[in-house]
Length: 287
Ligand SMILES: Cc1cc2nc3c(=O)[nH]c(=O)nc-3n(C[C@H](O)[C@H](O)[C@H](O)COP(=O)(O)OP(=O)(O)OC[C@H]3O[C@@H](n4cnc5c(N)ncnc54)[C@H](O)[C@@H]3O)c2cc1C
Image (cartoon, rainbow, N blue to C red; front, side):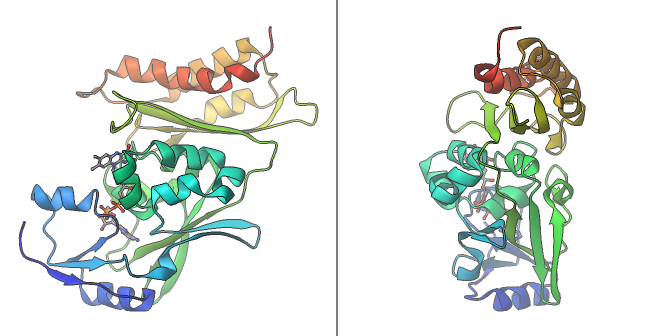
């Protein structure tokens, strides 16, 4: 590793000032589970490290003004074990519970997972179906960006050089919502997702047809994507196995994966559709 200057601000204002003075030469440190790997293999060589771990304003989970607010430095283990998230966005807590291992979840943060901009980042598909917003700040002020516009490609985001991600917010799901996050990897733990799927759906008052549906897919395109055609297909459809199988076939078509050392295109497409079937099958009635 090359030498670097280590800075540890204790407030957000201080962190933003340091970032603006660094003129693009600094890297922010959250949990370090991505950044340190890259610094050790030499792909990232920052002149300065701005460690955000002492900035208390960037931590926490709360409900305010009808929205759920989560500080950027909140760790995956904190999201997974939060009673508020378990009640109001259970699929998000499920996704964070599946990330890496205990050690990774106790260090890794939401900001790191989002800024890393991996299409396989597990916390991101649930945030797409929750229509979450990310809040970005620099020393001049802040702006809000829909999570779907934050990542622009593998490893690329809309963050400016002097900006940091401060928090994430979204509306809680209604109690009656159906939601889940499922992923397929080489192993159950410590394996990058080969494909993943997040689902949120609201049924009509008689619990017989879908009124609203959101589906997001991970690891099958350059960024996480929504499966808009499958969503539109399912709205108004009954809880039938036939409709579910058709929706899964559409999901498989909407997935645009690459082939790599971990999977073939055909495998990823088929399994992505099957994740929808796996998640919704217990709700289905006989056709
Ligand atoms: C063994 C192992 C297993 C893993 N398993 C999984 C897995 O199953 N699923 C998964 O999704 N990921 C996994 N990861 C990847 C990683 O743990 C996650 O992406 C994690 O959330 C990164 O968070 P961090 O806080 O450690 O980020 P860091 O490494 O500290 O930072 C990552 C990037 O984000 C930037 N950054 C951090 N905070 C901010 C901020 N507030 N504003 C702007 N930029 C910021 C940093 O400068 C850096 O570029 C794994 C990693 C390892 C090493």
